[in-house]
Length: 54
Image 1: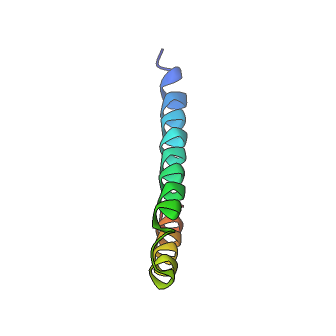
Image 2: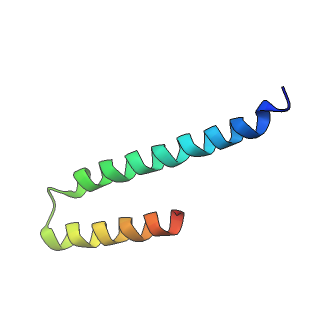
């Protein structure tokens, strides 16, 4: 069982990153109907957030 522990952590990390990516994509669609300038600012912010994560 202790040998499985590192793999488990890697799997959890991958799942966490996937969830973050999915939430960010939902964010893109959620902000889409707003003003165009607002939309562009939010896209820039999300890109900065993604760059910070990776």
